[in-house]
Amino acid sequence: MSSIEDGVLIPGLPNDIAKLCLAHVPRLEFPVMSQVSKSWRSLLQSKEFHIIRRDAGTLEEWLYALIADPCSQAIQWHVLSLDCSHWKCLPPMPGPAKSGFGFAVIHGKLLVIGGSREGVDGLESVADVLKYDSALNSWSKVRSMYAARYDFACTVLGGCVYVVGGRGQQGKNLSSVEVYDPEKDEWNQTVSLSRARWGGIAFGIEGKVYIMGGRSSCTMGSSRHVSMYDPSVKEWVDVKSVPVMILSHVLFDKKVYCIEWKNERKLAVYDPSSNNWKSVPIPLTGSLSLGFCLGILNGKVFLFPNRTGSGCRTLVYDPKMSKGLDWQTSAICPMGLCIDCVTIIA
Image (tube, rainbow, N blue to C red; front, top):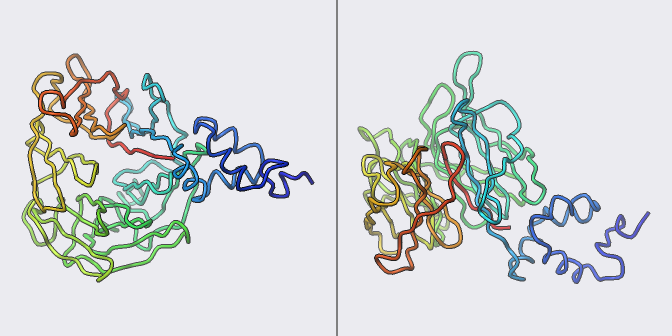
């Protein structure tokens, strides 16, 4: 048996030095590196390797988009090339086509959670969870949730994934909350919402989970409450009223940037530290699109148009720049309808 097969990463080097050497290899080469040995493959998949790259300053930020084909409407994940010139398809998600799923990025992995699909008796919710490993460019299954659900809110906090509310079997409205620990591949139930809620968004900031938008069993139309969960005391409280219906959002620099239904030429920005909202007008020049899907890349907020055609260009907002210099156009544009975006740093 060779030394590599024995667990030695690079013959002649201590493993800690070898790990640091491998951490400086460009991420684009990871799928090839994973074929060298079981030891290399295991390292590339590990949280430890992510931390080593973080400490070495070699983490790379890649943008992924969930895109619907303009003809077939089939959905597929794509990744933006490093030179931002084109999009490349990821391997298809395993299993039957589904919608209404949630997703979260943790330790350089993309989790696609739950959702709904067509069953024998109509629409059925599912509890399964898929994991995309960007280092290996491959999908695998991990532990399923306790409750099948779709149209739920989902976020990451403290190294765990939270799923909140949604709809279950036969469209039942849910108030239950589950927490996934990727280190243990384990789901646990925690304190439920005081009322069922579905179709909202969630984000984790400063040790708290926030949920906003969507509908609840105690409101007519969309819910206007921001609900906050503190894991240290295991309690949900309402903290603020919100825009009526959020179509797209991103978390950036500890603030939430939203596109609101019927107000799609403005960014609504929520700052949890002050519990306040502000509005940022989207310039009329640059793009004729009336709706956008938000993404984050290189410290900027990207607004991808929700339709194609002349005049529908991508806008880029840089909140660090002064007024008049904060908006630009970009040639980066998904080939199809952009449903959602995630940034994976690995």
